[in-house]
Picture 1 (cartoon, rainbow, N blue to C red):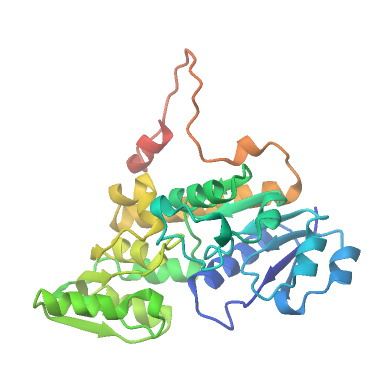
Picture 2: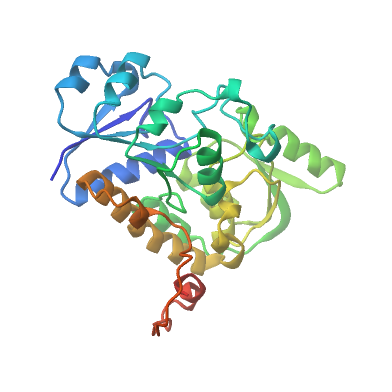
Length: 315
């Protein structure tokens, strides 16, 4: 088994962002599979350390990673766990028609192109990355990752009675659209409450009490964990078209406990995929979540009595 060096700008104990939480789950899950995973801050990574290492590298957020280090990584085996559109100067494809940026906005193309895999989190995320960079090493994981502890918090709040009120998540981050969400509630003359910044354990029991979540991201979210959490909790979503998770077929079909079970099942598939890439399989088509265009006379018997919501995906 190969050792892994994980490179990121920040880790979950430093920043409470969705990307950092997914990174942490990925690291812990790979460690449970028997892999040794070393954590390195991007701004502390050196060219000599990369050159002397035989590890497989997984690069997440990499704003702090020097250009020299990126050039050195190109000579190594590495994958990119893509967050927040770091192939664009603006890190936001949403202003461009069909999310296709102009050539002068594209950056880091060679770094993405030479990666063994670029892991994306939703259909639209994968499409936008591959079409902007014209690369064929993109793998859509089709979901984000939640820790077992966070999944338990979601389960514990599944059947919370609802207030017939809307709720907005307060955020100082302008791209999260709190101001636009509040303006919407005022415009339609609906009462709403604000949930102030808090931990996941405090957020979920509060969110679970509301009939509707108003959320207007101002950029294309590569996934949007909040939207999925709201649907698990039975909250209606009043939102825009900037949620990557909505491009997945399962998003509109599942909610409540069925969606929670789906997220749990998909977590294992995601770890299997990343593990296989890190261990050196070269068959890229094995990882891609694409529909096969081949046809053949074949009969398949599908077991769906436990999780009938998976039947369409199995077919």
